[in-house]
Image (cartoon, rainbow, N blue to C red; front, side, top):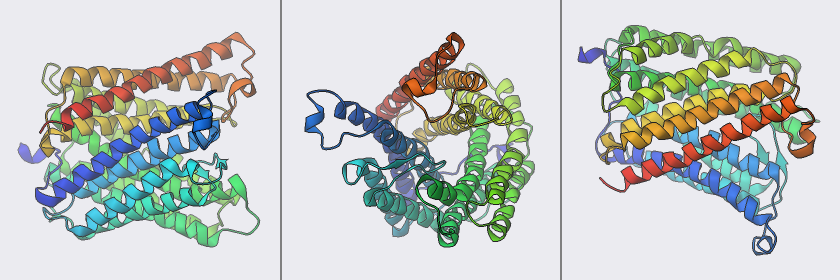
Length: 449
């Protein structure tokens, strides 16, 4: 029976300390994303703005916020999972990778103060066109790539597909391989970029292919989280370890089309754009759909009164948000806020899963068990607020509200548009409160071993 449990094996010694380091970097990214927004507000406040050497802009704040709260948060958690795949003595390479990534994250956070304010709102990795920002992104991705490659090379012995822990190990490895392929895709796009592309069009083409590939890494890891949360909360998903391993393999296979697209099209070509969009649209859910259904079965069979009900809640909310985001993706027509509604659902799904996984891992790392009651409220606020935010954006998109606009440019001249965007704002505010509460719950656990 224990062989069928999907669990993350926690190494001892330096590998465990390395995992804690990546967790702290992940939590820092969420703190940094919030601090940047506060600095922007102070920089635009009369009497105070003169004390801050940067006046900032809405788009600059959004660039840093998105990169920290999505790219850095997700890939730092990937570094944590990569650490769990190591032998007990992780070695100096992992800590070097962590140091490089942490330096990069700091540079990303403070880059608006270290160079020109030139934001571009391209997809996946929005950028500030200044040297400090690009150095930060380069260092962070370099550290992440080193950690992923080191985890694959110095990994623990394979436990086999007949054990739940072995299936989880296989899922981690496939996710790390895809992560390296996504970074390689960005390098490939940079080398083969055609002449004549500048500004936002250039960066859109640069990050398009690798950004789509990276979503498969997030999908592999969110399935890892679902399986672990289901087992930890006492649920029975009906999946055997062998079937789970096959799902991970199925989820990774579509990525094999990425080199073909790179070889056939240049970055920015219509076929390049459409090919990677279709790759994610039709391949991104092939493993997540059956895994999500199994997760729902596990949620229904789990013990609602057990001390791990916060893990049970994280499982349900993550699957629900993933499904909602996926369905909305098929409703996209034109350039409106239906697009951010789709990817907010998917992004928040992964974030909720990682929040639940953080609560699951903290006591295993030797810290105090998080307060279950507060964790439940935190997940309800964050997940529930995010659902309202996603539905508000979808409603607004159906009414024609355009994306990447603010203020009067949104054209909220009718009552339905005002109501839809009001729902969006209210949901976002509730989610922010839930995000702050997550950091508070983690801090209270981290300060006591």
